[in-house]
Length: 340
Image 1 (cartoon, one colour):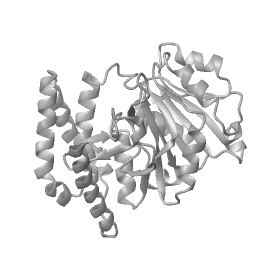
Image 2 (cartoon, rainbow, N blue to C red; image 1 turned 180 degrees about the vertical axis):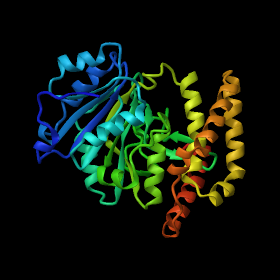
Image 3 (tube, rainbow, N blue to C red; image 1 turned 180 degrees about the horizontal axis):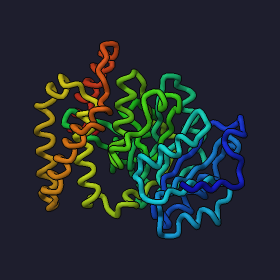
Image 4 (tube, helix red, strand yellow; image 1 turned 90 degrees about the vertical axis):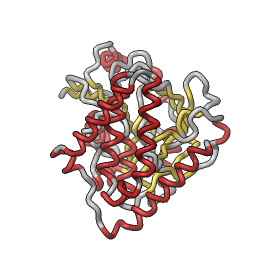
């Protein structure tokens, strides 16, 4: 692994630094300049944050662009595409700050972005993570994500997706933060474990928020930290072969990993129709067989030796947290049906 570090001092040399902004990049030549320029225009002093780009073996010239045009940014160049989870874990391990911000390369951030996320985390001592206000790139009056929810049907969905952004002006508790633009308390990441690299990509942020909830930690949404997000920039479209298969596999893996057996049995009357509806949805897109292959891979992943090791062990001391999570699954199902 090759590391490029120029300009701005390393995080451990500056006691003023609060957070490290970690950007995984894979062939992001179309977006990375705008993303970094917006980050360098924050309304907090440069000494308060550090920027790390973890490049996943890009071949489009984006790595060279970062090297040549952004001397104050730390570049960690990986030889190949190791996936979102491994890339951000490399960045988290390199960070020497109490907080880390994860940011997609296909974003532009508001000048208050870093300061608002840090302030929101500092204001809530029990908070594990805080999700930013993500607007759609081409229609910024609409929301892209106001934090993530998970429901009893086995569906993860973005709160506020496609809704007027004016409806999401207030902070709120959420099930998990969207890893495309969120801040995390690093000591809790180290306590519960970093991102599960078996995910490779998709639903890894849901898994992280779920594991934190089992331990009694909470996640929130902060509207003062604004981002415009292009979406699916590295995969090419919202529904494509790679994404559909990975997301289907991880939708099984995240349940097997985080639900005790009694809980997933309890939820079967919701999960079975939920997965059936998803299958029919992908059948309409002529991707039904692909979706089923992903489901099969998810069971294989959950039953593998690696999957069994990753299983979150049930502890009686966390029973109250499991009951709270179950309540969230029911509440988020109703919110989905009511489109609120």
